[in-house]
Image (cartoon, rainbow, N blue to C red):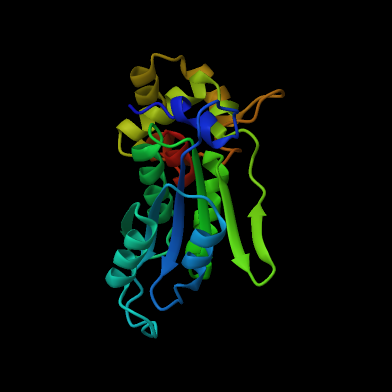
Length: 238
């Protein structure tokens, strides 16, 4: 599995001797003006641009050039790589997965990641901000007053969670997000059921995975506890 800890420090502002390389993610929804994307390019650093594009069916067409032509113009003007990642909606799971994929696929080549949410609709911009917060990278928007950087969690969830909690999350991922009982989870992780329960429900000195919003627990058949990883839990396991 990809180890996000190898890349996490690059998004947290660590000092480096060599010149830093920045990947800028721009959120864009069909029907919006390209101005928000252009402003982010003009005002913030980038060595590569990835546009996460929400395909909005039935939206009013942008009174500008077609999107594909816009991408070509940007790539030519910047003389740099521009990629498009399509999402069908601003749904939390889909947008978080798209941001996670961009980060995972590029973190070994870039030192810094920033997300421009100016050109997106309300929902997709909110979910993009959520993913930036969780991973620990910067997000921003641009208006007539300039660039506004959004506050982020200083340390990503990966640095808050213990190895035991991460092993529980990873086991859920391997089972496509859902496990039918504590017994099954114990077999997969090699952890005692009482220890698993403590990491799920928390203790006096540590919040559990349920309270952190990373796992939900429901009563299944025969009183067994069915565990399901949440959208936030999925992105923590990048």
